[in-house]
Image 1 (spheres, rainbow over the protein chains, first blue to last red):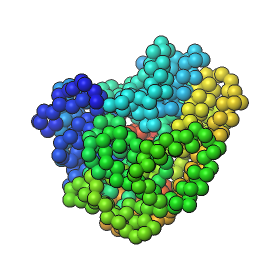
Image 2 (image 1 turned 180 degrees about the vertical axis):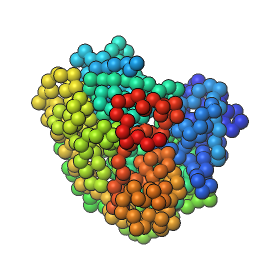
Image 3 (image 1 turned 90 degrees about the vertical axis):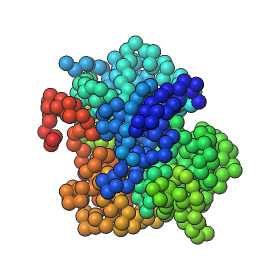
Image 4 (image 1 turned 60 degrees about the horizontal axis):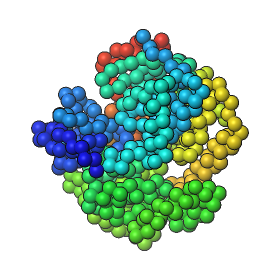
Length: 82
Length: 429
């Protein structure tokens, strides 16, 4: 594991994560869904490579970001709708 | 003002990297772009804990240090026209132009619907491998791996390296087919070695042939799966299921440019000649986009494309290597051919379109993607039918509809730039 550790906020909760991981991997450290589907089902990453859009969340105010495609940055604010 | 390059390469996996290397060696000014933050593509994806595989690291570091190479990370093609691309990165839209374009867009996973496939905890097999390398927490997690092909072994090794407890690997192909496949491997000593290494690392993990995951169950997240095998149905409790039925070429960019495609089974791939030329002048394609062929094949084809695109001659040895690698792919397809059983796992109420929550039942009576989409919203969501459209093609329902810009969902400010491409016909906002 990378020794470097970053702090990011997910739904207001601050967590420490290793540098170099994806936002998806950071969210997975907390017990929550990534998004709710149009009929209200809990969803989480499925394809892992930016194709399925199941992992989309709001990152630093920008909606519809694929959490599996974005590396964590120190101070990042992530909002799920899980 | 569009920045101009001699060669633009879309995709930074083995094909894209080989093309970049060859084009740079011929003195070209090259831009290589990829939707991911790091070079390597899927098979050479940078592991957040372990870095790149050694060979990939050496290649990537050399390319990144080259003065004539521009690397555009987290960048996707949104629209394309002859000689010109509209790109979007994390913050901006940008235009670039080129003399030659090399499409090295790789493949995605074939993900087929079954009851419970939308539950959190269910991913693709290559999907779990990608997530593992992104730092997905797997320590102590019980993982089942299923679907088809040698990729399942690689996914198991990666998951285990990240601390997962791999409970078993469930391969849909019969034991006889897998044994026959192993017998052909002597023709590809490198592959035989790879397979032996993977198997030895997984010697204590059950590998069950003729086995298919028919259902995933859980209350809000995965708790157990049902596996149908030669000896009946088994229930297995697990935290993650990684299930993938092989790979499908990413042809959307080629399709939008109007390049000729050909069918390989239920899915299109880009049609190229021996020098990786498409039927559009100045447009080349290499690797998985031209049909699933594996890493070595992608490397050789990338190299051929990079040489051809810069006017260099392509040696007979390289062409022969490419053909030999393609022959391996043919053998793979033959032995891991999908049992029609896996086409029939979805129930009438199983969601097919995960973006719009459209169940299989709603699609009865439609025989083309466009009518189904207009009536049910199937394929209208963020993934633009990449998951459901591909699954429906594989299931024999109907082919995916054609590709129009934007190639990926884009910001409004980017969409505003589409009008400055010379040909915007067919774009409907």
